[in-house]
Length: 84
Image (cartoon, rainbow, N blue to C red; front, side):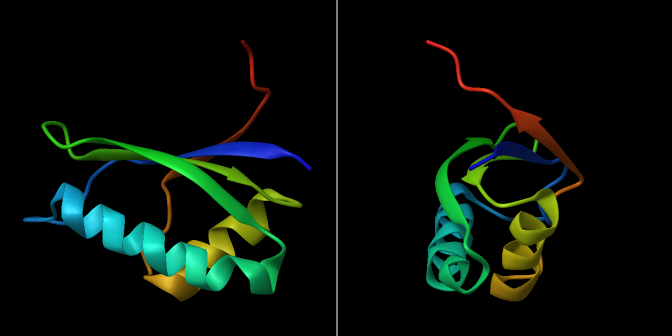
């Protein structure tokens, strides 16, 4: 299945790492409906950025999970290949 990295360029004002963890849990609760598997995420709290790694049939499915789970849709999404 294709692997994607999505980038959220700016967290909402006042959002914390704990808020991102909650959003990730919401993704996990929604992803099955779309055949998606959110794997990991990284937060750059100082710069307000979040990066999410997701297996999905296509970018649209990954976006749909974020939209339904919490409404925080990524600004960019890239298909990636994992390296060692």
